[in-house]
Amino acid sequence: MPDTQIEQAYSLAKDRYARLGVDTDAALDRLSAIPISLHCWQGDDVGGFESAGQELGGGLAVTGNYPGKARTPDELRADVEKALSLIPGKHRLNLHAFYAETGGRKVERTDLRPEHFSTWISWAKHHGLGMDFNPTYFSHPKAADGMTLGHPDPAIRRFWIDHGIACRKIGAAMGRELGTPCVTNVWIPDGIKDVPVDRKGPRLRLLESLDATFAEPIDPKHNLDAVECKLFGIGSESYVTGSHEFYLGYAVSRRKLLCLDAGHFHPTEVISDKISSVLMWVPELLLHVSRGIRWDSDHVVILNDELQAIAQELVRGDFLGRVHIGLDFFDASINRVAAWAVGTRAMLKALLMALIEPIGRLRQVEAEGDFTSRLALLEEAKGLPWAAVWDYYCLAKAVPAGAAWLDEVKRYERDVLSKR
Image 1 (cartoon, rainbow, N blue to C red):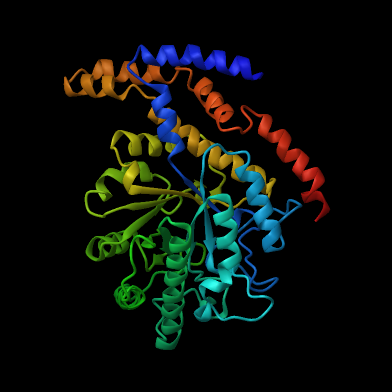
Image 2: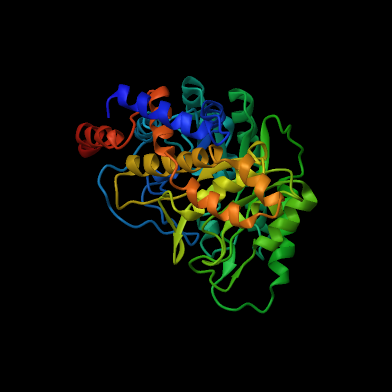
């Protein structure tokens, strides 16, 4: 669509929203201040750069063999840059520990230091990006049996505690260098395939291990600690040590961020319904926005009902200042750069739709007990011209509007990805 048509369509949409008491210009200003944390592992199928051909493990599975996977840190950074050029706004990069650059030397995970991520940090600083970080508690011989921080062997627990300590220091270095707090998120694969006899023991060990990991205070201006729950995984169908109830209690008692992953609950549960309850008790939330189909399958995020419900809850509850939004999916069956673009643009569209909802009028009729008007207005709002506002936002941020971004991906595939 030509720029003039986009501008004309926005002008008409702006007037229509104004009649409902919505300032679309103000909404776009708010949207531009919301960073989404892009997960690096979409670009290389959760491979990392620690050692070639290592088993993924941890109950994780990536399906597909689409050509063009990033094989080196430079290729991965180039792919992220291409994705960011198709996404309006200023965002962040979420990195796992086994994406360290060690110059070809073997460095154990307990010995990782900020210098092993100096190129990532310099690259992020050059592009004006914040960074988030994750210890990697999988794809390692000491995690081969599916237990880490809750392991019965004290030596193995100590190894993973030391890895977590090292990663918190790396996260703090990222936050300090980039001038924005790094969210360092702890997710472990610990669980049991069949029904356990002792559910308490591993959780007591996990509690002790987490306390040891977080023992050293770190300035929250540089690093924020988060803990991530899960219901089940491949190989841990019957019992996961770090359950929702465990980590909710831990986050409340230790004043940590709680990470809610959209794929980590029963298929009939949604995280949009948990946000307002959890934020009564924890200081901040980390969201890993994903799309599970039948199980925690980490499909690419799309603009579905749950994504819209998540965004609506963040805006309606005025929670945007207390929630960090990250993505977590990995699809190797499609172009990986396109996956980033589809998922991140979908998240931003959902936020935009929530920001230009006529919330003032909706709150008024709800407070008056006029639930008929509430239902009717919510239905009418679905037909409002939000897409015209979105296209204008893309135009204003100098990224392709509509489906034009796909042409850029196809060119990049032809000129770069197909030659790998």
